[in-house]
Length: 37
Image (cartoon, rainbow, N blue to C red):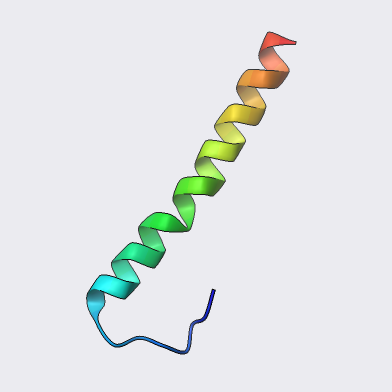
């Protein structure tokens, strides 16, 4: 998580796609787990 190194747009896109991905997945998994329980 370093907002300093930004050599290309690929890095930004990858970081953007990788940042919300785990967060969303975690929230969805948590919701699923809570609902199943």
